[in-house]
Length: 634
Image (cartoon, rainbow, N blue to C red):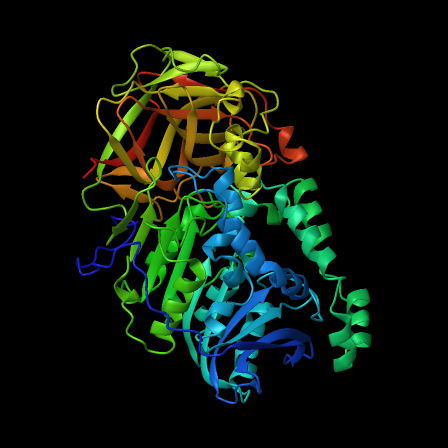
């Protein structure tokens, strides 16, 4: 992969991260909902849409307007009823006192609705009131739509285009369309844009991923137990349709027949992946590849919105780089947030504009052609961990970033008495050979991995449930550096190169990078994971700087698997997700290495039988080290 992760741009993006873009006054005082509108697909399946149109006391405006479409598997009827309380939720959340936002706390989780995320999650009423039509569509086999659900399948991707074609034919649409969404809806929006449908003008994708199987379903080759919970939830919600709308449209009979005869099969399939030995879909393969958005085909201006602790944190900058548009037409903003907390604090002084307003401004620029300046924002905007500062970059990592190594040492750091094994990080390789076994046993549920998997909800239970990983480090080998003599900025992805040994034919590694405060608090910054049998590195697709591997690309395919030879040392490179973090004077950098990270990862029962004890080898001839990039503060 070429240096850097994103391409450098001229320094012409002078708009600060907290700029307020003019979205104009409310043009239409009333909004009119038309729910469970049937849209027939080319194969006979019927998707249903909720349509929200602006107007006044005389009814919806007759003026054709641009349309904003959101595809969802989460049953739009439930979202529709929930949105009745969005104004109240936003108002009450805004009354919660803000934290200093150097780190997301329980207060910030509660304050999330005040930042405007609820509208982009469903239908952006802020935009509709200013001259758009909003639609939310149940994807096939979910909510009130017929057919069988097969997430991001080629047939579902075709549905997206057919829905856009239908919308453009309606008298209330002027032919211009934007797509948006959060999580599944965001990925659907990227899929839609990649097909270049006629009339598509802009995309706003919140918490999307370029490769959901790699990033969430099979992270580092290990299963994610939350995927089965997700599949069960989507399949459960499809049995709660909007019956009045179905009856009104004469679709109740077809809906029931489809639900009884068209099974998605994903519950059984997910169980088979977990339980069957070497199931082909337990690896990345052609089936998973067919579900990925073809980002290089996107021509519509696109906003990518992510979080450092999102389940899809791995790919925010990669998605930005792959979209073949100039900066400004494409934007990426990464907050210090989790999957369910994007936009917390937005709208507050010093922070970006509220998320619903940012989305409206982006659509105003690229759908309506209003020169509001948002194309000079960013184009790479990040909230730095450690101090909460908002920064604009023209490339990522920034041009002044420099490669650095810290070596793993068997010497005690004296800073991790709570850990199973207290070891050190050193600027020079260790001269003494040491074997550091990784302990077994259950990890604590009070961890940042749990916070990531609960999408930020567990942060509500206290700092140890996301902002202090010391409980989790009780079953880890920790490598802690000396107190910093000057402030240091970490930027970009990292690579942990380990010399290791195992007594089985496989081993699992869970890595957490932490900022250790002078009081001992171990604040997680970023993370990585990998099965040893899937350690093969595709060097052509990996990210190197000055010859240093900083982000390994593991194929994670059955063909690339390399079982270990028990007792024989091996080398493994573990990619660690990108970050931007400030470590203050007196703080320390820590790498925590564990052999499990439940509930973030689940080792399949059949694979557990191949895993025995494992250890990090501190070998002067084969040093283990962390490779990363740093900057000095401005």
